[in-house]
Length: 157
Ligand code: FES
Image 1 (cartoon, rainbow, N blue to C red):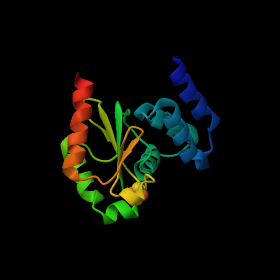
Image 2: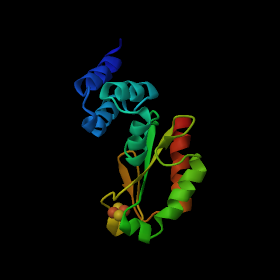
Image 3: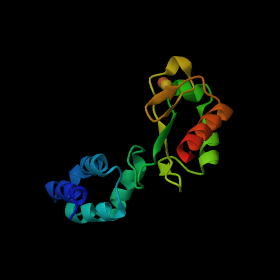
């Protein structure tokens, strides 16, 4: 068993028969492995003694939990009040169309993970997005698509 698999197995074993720890266990697995695989989810369900569908419900409810591997770049569109009021939903629609993903999904080529997040701490320059660790303000749909294309060109080069 590889180290990563062993670490996930250790997390699952630590929470055995403690269904109230489902969310904590899922967060720990994601923190360790980068996402929650189907195998991890099923093993955790057995260990906790809960239906696997219940864990899938938790994963679906919390947008920060992922069931697919993260992409090379993480794209976050702010869903906070200030950004929503200044049109972030138009940016989100452009990102989703351009990348062909829904929130919490990764593009098929593995380049981008996409998330809706609540406040990037850049409200004065709403609407805001982040790509990896960089936050961008006063965004618009076309500008964000151009930004994504720059990342795609850089990654493809
Ligand atoms: S609400 Fe979007 S940066 Fe604060």
